[in-house]
Image: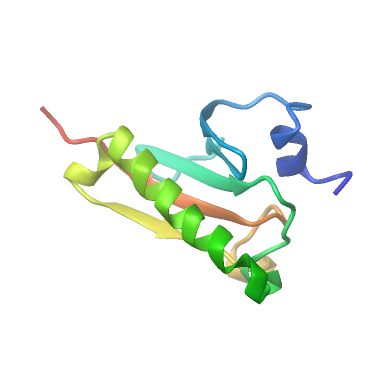
Length: 110
């Protein structure tokens, strides 16, 4: 999508703090964090929301959750627990109309 913020970040047209990237996803820091660690797992394929998924997206969504799991482990969040969440549509709190998964948590304190 031409005017999509997350598509522009994925295309490297806008700056962002990228913590992970592969062929299907980017993981970036949320610019308005709601937790000590608040990351977004963003699909490179433009999908508006969970409500716009189709059967052919099953593998992508599974990979999205496993990507969040790996990043949580890389960040040390698995030691204390973390939260995953999708906001769907404006009424559900989705601010950017591009599928993304919120990964929220904290690191284990030493």
